[in-house]
Image (cartoon, rainbow, N blue to C red; front, side, top):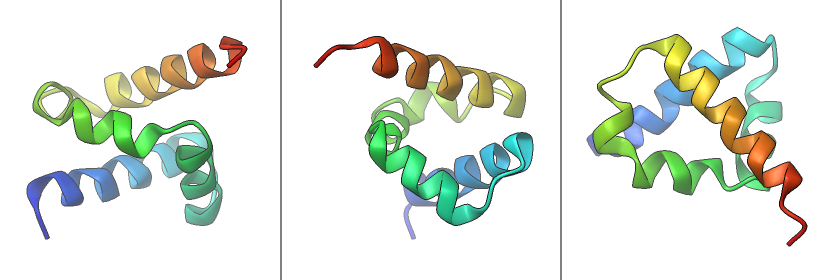
Length: 70
């Protein structure tokens, strides 16, 4: 598995723990809001940050996508 792939799994796991969700719930959420692609595209910057930052960044991304009328 690539480093990016491992990081995607890592992000799913920390988000799951932080939000007390199941893996399936997080996977559906990440798919609905395009989080998989976002994390992959920002791998170089995100993998150098801490867990709290990653969870907060994902939350901000979801909030922005929810506000987007498209």
